[in-house]
Image 1 (spheres, rainbow, N blue to C red):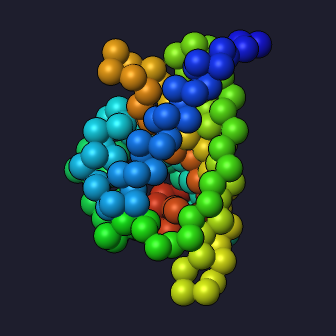
Image 2 (image 1 turned 60 degrees about the vertical axis):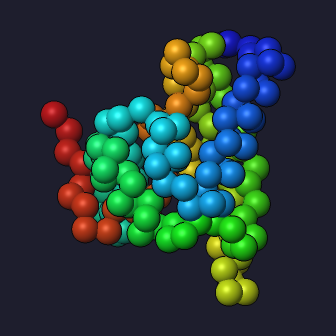
Length: 141
């Protein structure tokens, strides 16, 4: 099992600080700059099975526009992230987050695959349950 150095752990924390700042601003193009496309998504269809998709940059920006609107500022978002390094260049980051919107508290649990590029970390795969409304169920083969 790969054991990351403190510097490697800090580099992932710094990447998320940059991501969180862009998300707070609603800077969707900046968020897209922090990704590798096509981006893989894995979720599930409520009451069904898993669903998978790939997004282009334009699809990602449009989806985030719908999900985030003008950004996450003022949402009372708190995240606890746990990185699991598979190698020096691949890290799965599990996140448990709590968001408060209009007095309602929402809990989220998701994971991202970050890949190290020549320009630094980038996210390439998002995994979270519940996004698959209207998506076709995944099929083997």
